[in-house]
Figure (tube, rainbow, N blue to C red):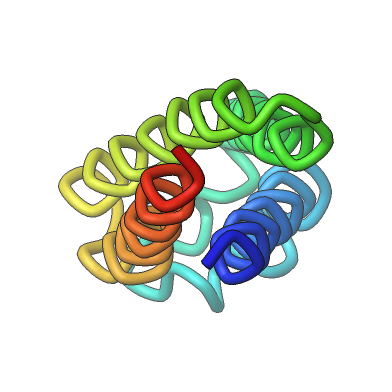
Length: 125
């Protein structure tokens, strides 16, 4: 159970490393393909805003990676759960404000990882 939890936490972290890269370094080039409903001229105008948002996604990834490195089982689960809740909430807000599919890309994987973190910790306790 713990292995599945760790894999899912790692996958959510990897996704947020990608999102951070996308928002910080590829917003203008890839943004119109990712968000086709947005006006094309919006991306150049919001590059600084997107980079700031990407930084926050980088922090989420860093927290999830950190959780995988913690030796104490209880604290590993607590830190992972905290950052996964942050990701899930960010996904809901993104779905409400940017694109409904963000809930499937961000919130659903975070909630799956939360479930397995919870089950792994419960089994270990």
